Length: 240
Image 1 (tube, rainbow, N blue to C red):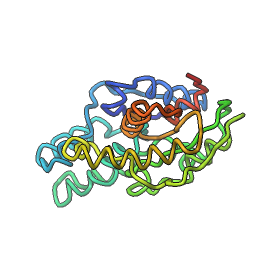
Image 2: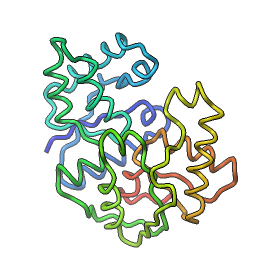
Image 3: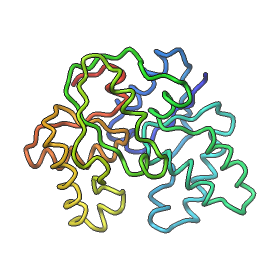
């Protein structure tokens, strides 16, 4: 397939290696990866802040950018949920609604795309570490993604997957939520971070870069052992 890579803002600005790892895995599987430089933010910050008119203009632009894409794949459950779930809501009852629904049907989170669209669980990766997995809220609750990343991790050579005791708890980031309610956000990070740390794993794997940054910050300030790593990096064979 020809896959159009959607690179979210967090990836572009803070963890570009995640985008590169995503492309690496897809290309190893024999697919052509296309990056469209005219793409921008998905519009989620404006949407979450209540600036829906501004978010609509961003959504309309994205629909145009990816109008002829065979498949759009992003390494962020949060941003993919914005495009797949909330674009059709934003543009309901407008001339852009059919195009929004069409794009939604062609847009996938990275791990979901591998398992559900390509039918692949074993990408030939090796990662000799003990890891646990953090479910980002948008991926889990909006996209209904739970088993796909775990199936991919179980197929990685020499990787030991351990479940934490708070697998579905939020990390507390929530984009603007962490800015508007920092004390609540930190308390939530303490609950989830503590759960992840109790696994005594070397790495916390996530499919959402924003969750990684939130958890990595809390774990580091507490002197806890696990470091975060994106699912795509694990599947690309990275071992920091």
